[in-house]
Image (cartoon, rainbow, N blue to C red; front, top):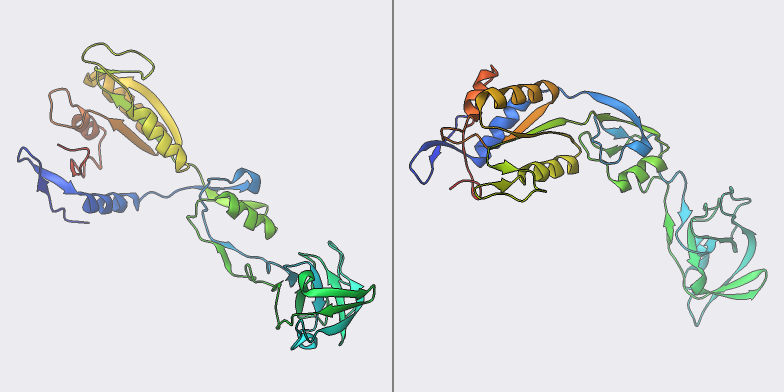
Length: 301
């Protein structure tokens, strides 16, 4: 347990906890919270949090592919080729998208290949069309040589089999879903969405869609907190605006605690006569209050 180094506010009151210490204390308390998980289909997994790591079941890509339209060649056959001293290769095949290559690229030969086409056996590089000149339908002139692996994405270059594709605790983004789809993963284990209840307190608070009377203010905390909760993947339950009277506030807080994993209430936590937050939290029972006041600006006088 962290031993808090309390500071004082502008009025000289002690008991304020430094921000870093408050976060550490909170995390220690959350260590007792065991989140539950569920398995859902990939098309429902956006903005959900992985309950465990995802291990790649295969290499991606599964085989070497061309990254250019051009000709699959043996790189050694193009060594030294230039505009002034081109080399010549016979066209002996063509790779068709969506089909397995037919035949082997032999010495002095090449196969026509599209972007994304599977590299045929015997070839170890691709000469892009822009660096070739057709001689006729069966032969090309190459004006720029290549090295082994040029214009290729190799097998497993994106991710290899048994590698960690995504870590536990990762918030799934659209590009993550694309990666998992590419690996043939149709379902993922994710944490249940954390339920967060919001209770707004204060007799001076009115709904944000209303015109406040003198002495009243619109409720901006609820919608702000709700947006932050939803953005981070939580479920938000709004319990509305509750009076500062204890016999009204406490039942609302108790109900929210029973129905949610986390409860946030705004107002009622200072030292005013009508600030009933401390009394209500203590009335809920253990663990009670373990931080009361954080040395943070803005937010503290």
